[in-house]
Length: 426
Image (cartoon, rainbow, N blue to C red; front, side, top):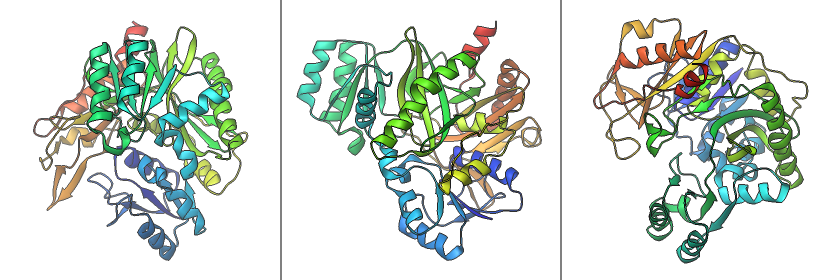
């Protein structure tokens, strides 16, 4: 079997790692690749967004399956292009991917179909947005409607902060096209939960829930990032809660998209807030999350490749159930100095031998490259250290241990990944 992975970050490294374990005899390629994927897949000198070139190459190579990681190519219709040439590709169509690429559209879908989410209003001009803010007051969340690499949501505790966020996005165009339309939504209180669900356009099969850590600083301080760490499983995600999420959010969303002629075939990621009134949708993503994938995938005991192949071919996953290994996983992200703001690249990375050889540690590369035999930083989020242990506390300690033994100039990471779970269990 010939498999192409589109994307070259930590999520794609984790997916590649798992798919290779599922199919050790398969041949793998990856767009660009990074310093950690070199031994697993052949790198292509093409970017994830070079869609016509990728489709042409895959056709010539006889690729059997394409697995698309990032949201950008999905929003640009990469799956439609591959399917149009008869190449099986896992991921939603461009129309279905709008559930992530347009938060305004996703919110309207939820309102039309009674899917629980925060109260909101959408704007594409500054004056009416500011007038609405004067009516609702603070705290609120101001979100860029488009794709902003995980940095488009600003939690505003005060009216002044919200005005500044709106002026930045709508007035100054700080987020470019992503911020040309914004969503102002009610501030929801509670804990967040990330739930991945595989969908064939009709059925949904949830995976193991995880909890992400978006803020750059410990104790949930500082600006939002693409994610500084994650852990799974989450004690709050009881069987009863997961049943209600599947019944009231996941299945109705997939049914709504089918009804609106946008069947969702791929990985639906529901970011939820567990409020006093019950779970509500913070946002949907149209692909595997990052860094949750790095925590969830290592706990998956059953095949990931088999159901991805079924969905990519337009088949049914009715009756599918995933099998999970016992224990827990905690992922700690090491980032470049300055991230999520401006940062430099090209710093040498040293991973201690005891980390490389540890059976209970996996180091997934996100922003690295190999140049002249040296491993160098090449992004904001550089590495993700996933530890496996019988408990969250044990995995968290082991993940920190691994992160402390990886060095590059001005690196930083959170030492409190999984703190809520530890607090609950204490």
